Amino acid sequence: MKNNIWTGHKVRLRAILPTDWDKFHNNDSDSDCARLCDVINFPRSEEGTKAWAEYQASRGPDGDKIMLAVETLDAVLVGSISSNNCDTRNGTFTYGVAIFREFWRNGYASEAIKILLRYYFEELRYQKVTAHVYVFNEGSLELHERLGFVQEGKLRNMVFTNGQHYDEYLYGMTKSEYSKMKI
Image (cartoon, rainbow, N blue to C red; front, side, top):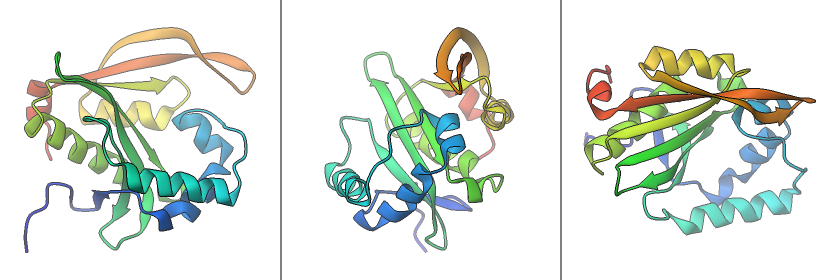
């Protein structure tokens, strides 16, 4: 069997498919999950989610910025991961990961992050990654610390949700720190 850089022991990263729309649409109705990952958006119709999935499937990367599906090795869609703010001059980028609630605590997010980091550090020559984590997202705080990310700062009152403002933590990892990570 061929080795694929996008495949781990539990999950693989792949392009979003038009047929993924229903899983993303179902996840959009989980307000608590949306709050942890980003923001609670206005409701979207099924047709709107289908159009979004079609767009994601057809667009591909924008430079080094990409959104990918996270699926199990049994081809079950469990979430998504995206790279953002890819600065090739300085070799820095950010990312976001979102795992659907029913698949939390299975190691899917940590493996998806490791796969993404492997590609950006070992193939694209990036030297630093930053993750933004809301103070109320305890699972993500624990995940990043367990992976070896270093808390580099706190942005006060950066996120407004559920009727109040919350802080946002910045976590970082350099390529040399990544090299010590067990993959």
